Image (cartoon, rainbow, N blue to C red):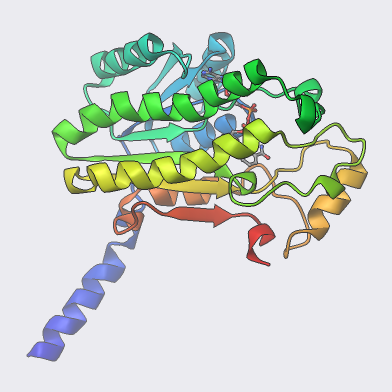
Length: 279
Ligand SMILES: NC(=O)c1ccc[n+]([C@@H]2O[C@H](COP(=O)([O-])OP(=O)(O)OC[C@H]3O[C@@H](n4cnc5c(N)ncnc54)[C@H](O)[C@@H]3O)[C@@H](O)[C@H]2O)c1
């Protein structure tokens, strides 16, 4: 008799795997939606029939992305202009989302301060405080504000998922030797803020864990586009897998974190970095 029940439960589990990854009709806010990886996430979530709020300081790019997605997919989308570092702007995003969709199931804190080659090349000794504050305002305060405003709604419903996007440079220091004269040096602002969201995840998890909100970090390694070949070579040698990531290699992890497949995961950090931080 006991064995029978055991077999039945295994059978049920196998039958529900598809369901575990089902995020169809969930309402998910994606900040920095029109950026390089935001576009990949938007495409993937559209394929999963998610109702996506495309939120970005660059509204025009969001609208364009929305039009492209609407031609290919039947999920609903909403484009919003958002400045993550501005509380009123974040509050407006939440109220417009609720007006259209009446619920918020997920938040992806993906927006990042647009560091140019100029900022990335400033020596630490002279790194200007005003630039550091701008980076903190978007990367750290922005993730906090969006989590605070969206988390309030989720806590009332006792349900929700927040994903904070971090980087290997939030976990370990950027190896200054791989940059050469590429102008791609990773700034102190990026290091400080990307590490801060990892502990933001833990704090929010301990605060809201008993309110049905799961908060996790998704830590990424560098994606190849058309960087300096010497940089790509040096970067690749620092990974166990021997290459940089392709732009679509993070969508699986994101879907996992948004779905019930990760229902026992909270306050954690999912690292997808080709092994960069593992040796
Ligand atoms: N691309 C990579 O190789 C890589 C590697 C590791 C981690 N990441 C992380 O992935 C995330 C996305 O990176 P990406 O390469 O797509 O960056 P991106 O610069 O292409 O996109 C960032 C988006 O954020 C938006 N943004 C900037 N300031 C904003 C603000 N104040 N309010 C709202 N939106 C704002 C920009 O308009 C842009 O669309 C970031 O959090 C980044 O740290 C990226």
